[in-house]
Image 1 (tube, protein in one colour):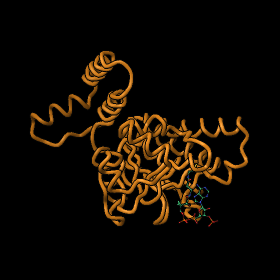
Image 2 (cartoon, rainbow, N blue to C red):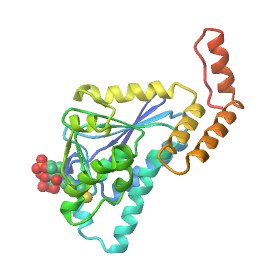
Image 3 (tube, rainbow, N blue to C red):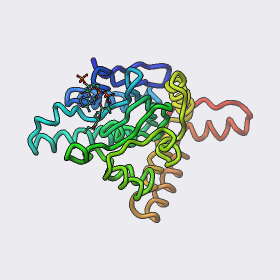
Length: 257
Ligand code: COA
């Protein structure tokens, strides 16, 4: 197996484990990652997911270039759509996804990190979209998510030059939320995931769903959507429990409905 999944309480740690090629993703690896993420998204015992890469050099160095070189246009389309589906699942699954970027996050690796809700990285992380150097372009969402995460001008500079972005610059640009020492990176990501996973899963899911609309569509419609989700939460036992627990000065016990 090249995608390792380990559970700790309500948190799942997903590790792309192909360090000999800096965790580059072939179609087989994408299929495995796709399937694991689908299982985790459906598993109500999992409250948060952390994504990282094996070894001390790379998060994910992108699509497998050796495989890419063999593709016809139709095969490239299918490959692009598969990567987009995985990124979409990371972004929209009803539980938080946290990228622990422990090294190179290039091409599709940067795109998978961008699709996660929160990004932490080690000081030696390097981000980039070097596709233009290969005579191709990003296909798993970077042309949209990089600008929405940082700024249009920065995104265009990175996409058009293919240059790498250091951890410090990534932090300065809002591409990551924090830089964490290598030994502490995955533990910190797991602790953050556990903190969120301890809350009401339905409140977390709806908060994520509403926030995902922040940079899309019509603001008025998004406020209506937020109000609707806010109202729906008042039908849950978790909302009653959370509000009562505050009044009774005790910790809440959430059950996810
Ligand atoms: N696809 C397939 N193999 C890859 C890969 C990728 N995206 N990225 C790295 N590898 C392989 C290398 O071919 C090499 O394999 P080898 O030992 O059999 O020769 C191994 O991983 C180690 O990489 P190497 O290039 O020797 O390490 P480095 O320290 O000199 O350079 C990088 C590291 C990340 C700068 C360099 O590997 C790189 O530019 N990779 C491609 C990144 C990229 O363009 N990604 C987007 C793809 S669309």
